[in-house]
Length: 179
Image 1 (tube, helix red, strand yellow):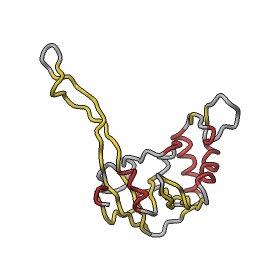
Image 2: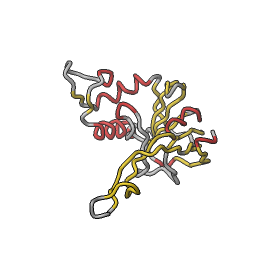
Image 3: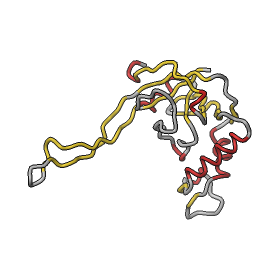
């Protein structure tokens, strides 16, 4: 199976230290995320990185350069990934996936009890909820999951989340500007 991953970073392999993609609703730390369409991975390869360096134009009274911090635009890479037919739980919609994940989530909001991701409430336990959701699926023998026909950055794609980098092989790396 071939899938695509966009990143502003250059990757050699997928490990726990791999920078996660910035995804909405706090789902980014569940696993490694992939798309079935190369164009759907592109927006994840375009972003900014924070730079901290000595200024060349701003100085303290003693002549030492000030340290400045700013965000620099980055255009990264699209990775073509091969994985050998993983055992995936399939969700027919993003909503169905989020409803199942919500069982593990604690939200803070002013409206009502039993808040969900749709209430745009504050997720209080992102890491714990994602770990519990992932562990539940792994205990059922799944390597990850698939959300079919997901609208993502003005594209419709199958959206994959894989829990371990062990089953992933980088087949090709392409600069996003060459796509």
